[in-house]
Amino acid sequence: MFRPEKWVKSQVEPWEQQPASAGLALKVGTAVKLDGGVLAVCNGEDKPGFICMADVTAEKDGQMVPVERVREETVYETELSVASASIKRGEKYTIDEGGEKLTATAGGSAEVVDFDGTKAGDKVRVRFV
Image (tube, rainbow, N blue to C red):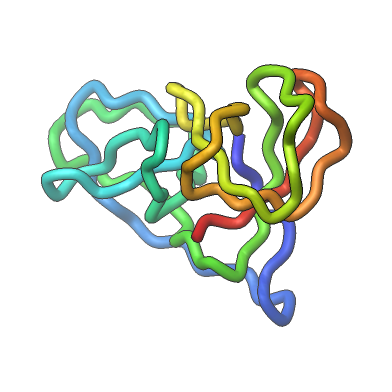
C-alpha cells in the first residue's frame, strides 16, 4: 500500500473520483493510472497518476472510485516487496505487479527518500517523479 505520509506545507490532497472498468478490484493504497479513460493498476516503470483511497471492485464500466492525485512533492510510505541490499536514497525503483509495494529493480518512477531496512516488508518512503 502506498500511504501518503508527508504533504507540501502539510496540506492534504483532496480526493477526487475517477472511472474504473467492470471487475477492476482495488485496495486502499494501490497505485493507479488512467489508461483508455479508466483506472488501471500501475506496475513496473509506470508512473502513478493517483492512489486509490477505497477497497472496491467495480460492478460496472464507469463506476467512480475515490482517488488522491499523485504530486511529486508528496512522500508515500510503502514496503519492499523483496529484500534489497543495494537500496539507496535518491535512486528510482519499480512498482510490484499489484501496484502496492516497491521492488528492488532500478529504473522506475518511485524515488527513494528514506527507508527503515533492506528486508522484504521493511518500510520505505518514496515520491513519484
